[in-house]
Image (cartoon, rainbow, N blue to C red; front, side, top):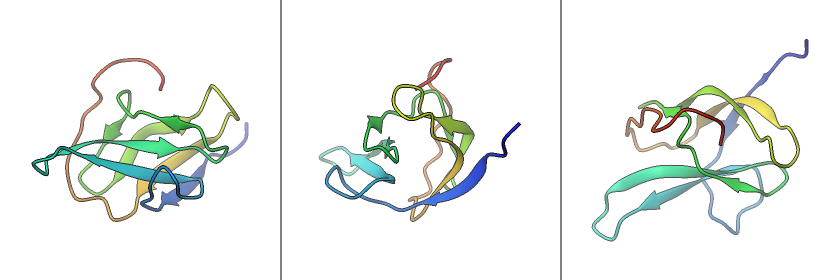
Length: 91
C-alpha cells in the first residue's frame, strides 16, 4: 500500500495555481468552509472533512473525480475556525 503524503496547502484564489485552499467569507466577514483546489485544478467543497482550528484537515483528502490525489492536508494561514464534517461521504 502506498503511503499518503502530508501536504501544507497555501491559501489562494480561484485564479491561483493548484493546489491551494480558497477562503470563503460572508459580506459581514463570517468565515465559511474553505474550498480546495486539487493538483489538477478541480475545485472541491470540504463538507465531508473536519477543518480543525490549526488548519489540519481530517480525514485524508482524496479527489475521486479527477486525478485520485490522496494526501493529508494542513491549510496554511488558516484563521482558526473549527468546522466539523457537515455530512458523511466523499467530496
